[in-house]
Length: 302
Ligand code: RUB
Image (cartoon, rainbow, N blue to C red):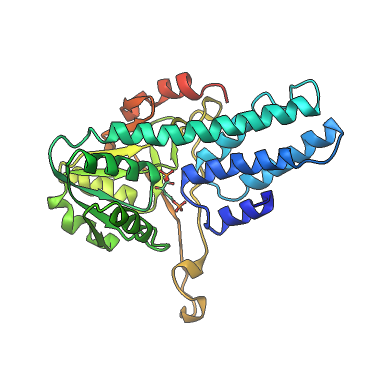
């Protein structure tokens, strides 16, 4: 896949989920650098920067995308010549992808300790980090059932049920509006994250804030799974990510819309820190209030 194909696949959500998007962007920059034919270092810098901008333009909400690009380009343009810059970029991208995969595995292992006895989990959308944790809980013999929210409008819950069923984990699909109905049977909420802002707010798929408030109402703990590259970097301290709005036709065929009706399709939610019990990272489980210090220590360099 060349860089433009990767960009289009992220835009049309063939590649989706914050971790996968981040790894795809790093890999796309790596092959771009590997296949770069020119010999002028200035042109290389300009073209790589344009390639990075193109990837960044694809989806606005997951900070993992811009963090993966920043980490892939870290110190690249300070190298002595084009060849050294190319090698630096390739090495950074390889490190990012390998660290990202290990982070998901480590988060799964930590998440696997959150259910101390057999219980019921509810999740929303499709998060590889949350699924990794569910799998570990299952290995420990502690998953009675997983409720998977359908996740309108793109129905990523259908990916989740397939993945869990393939691992023989008992799973029940529900429509999003049934989340409150089933909550009395739920012991813990597991969600992914696209971004963790510097105040500990978690940005994840639309419906996650409703899920977290319903959980709070029922005294059910809410855990979010987030690799360090999903935290806002220190350079963006106190900034908010843009919540992506997608097209009408994800919800309804525009030809079926009565005249004068508007459709609003925000696809991410901001979950306030007070609704989150813990954020599971590859460096340990933190409280949302610990986010500023965590960012300073682990992602301060970008
Ligand atoms: C995906 C989504 C996921 C997070 C975390 O939204 O909200 O929960 O990205 O996923 P979309 P992961 O389908 O719109 O990309 O843990 O796999 O990074």
